[in-house]
Length: 72
Image (cartoon, rainbow, N blue to C red; front, top):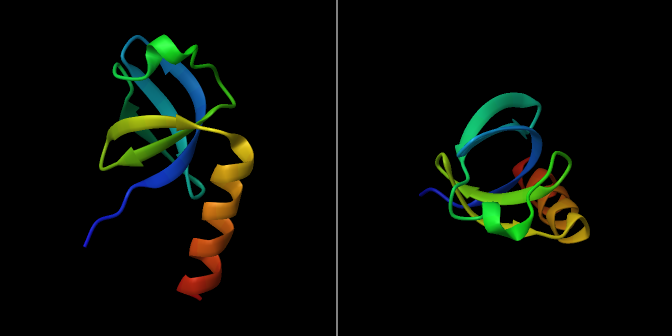
């Protein structure tokens, strides 16, 4: 099963964002959320390589901590 997960935006390149995906740099297609004023340092909820939603940092960090707690 695949779940959406939070990632941190590192750089923006037109419709794509370079993101930190649990310590790995990957890409996410972010054209659907660019009108939200997306910037480096923001967090996105991503499914596969599709950014679905911009989320607040505190919410993203809670989800990341919960996933790490339950995956160890």
